[in-house]
Length: 499
Image (cartoon, rainbow, N blue to C red; front, side, top):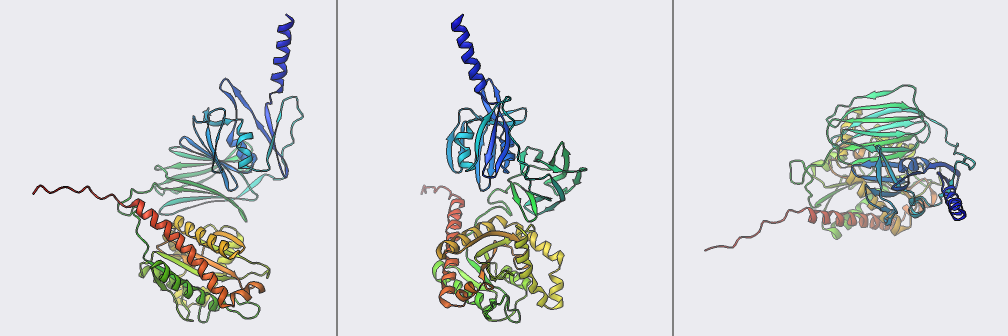
């Protein structure tokens, strides 16, 4: 009896030591409570709930789930214990599973995977007898600013713009995609009906203290991409159409690169930005562009065509029209930046999108697009809103490749010259519109910054900039050629002659 009593006491203490929830703590304080789910299979936590507490995202497609926090992610597979966290494989005590339609992951992910996924976040077990952990209250409930969508040839974009930042959790099914937006206040449901052959209906509706975005599909979706942007705050959902098989008409057949069009911004009666001592953007970028052209032709064996090789004015639309007539494989526009704050510095690379990365990207695009006011009336009419939308639609086919080229060129410039990386961004640049090929715009520095203006005025620095841009294009070509070789169809087996 005494032994049994002691064993019961020990067992009771052990049970009492088990938490019924975890308190998450970050550098800014308590993040909230994460409930613990226990059954005969083991102890689990909800990855969707974890994503919300970390201001991250949880997305599900078929038997795979991805937990993303910032630029790091953890990838789970249903019925498997292994998870890839920030590129490293971690083995958990229990497999990831689905219970009543919701994913559950082994609780030891908090100790084995969370430190790599979200450095600085710690967890403490709490019980019902413990003092309830305070929940973060710094972020007020968000209000809906706008729900909008846009249909492109290759994907449909859905944007939920809010008053403050919101986290989200995505679950994709065969016929519907659901996005839960915690603490997004919504008085009434909003409905849009794209009916574009991919998305049938978009419905944003209140669900308790949250909102749920329901996307009804007309046909099977391909890749699904999500992003959280700010300034203004937005959750962006891109739903892609399935890729056509290689070799089909309009499919994904890869061709070798043969011709690049290089575009020196501004020119003629359009000086572009002007530095404090009078250095003009049109002169700097023309010199850099010529240098890049020489290096590409000599080093890569590609043909290069320039939209302008002298100090002349070229309307924005004619630049990409020229690239289209030349049947160019790539379009690269080179510019120098300007900012009201003279201390702004660094390089950034853009590709075309209807959704600007932030208000600063929108401002830069507006500055570059102002060149349209220097064109004649006929050209301005051609550059109207309708045409800009059509250009955007044309370029959307190459958005992924444009993004890849932008990343490669920016990485080359910042590494080789030790420049301040301002990032790869998106905005509505007229000069990129209508380019039926991957297209980017490079801002090589700020002429309004006296230090950068002095550098941009020297032939030595312009040569170094050109060398860095060339190196980025060379790396992009290397990767492209590798994919061309991989995608090349196998030759049919040779048959022996019977003669």
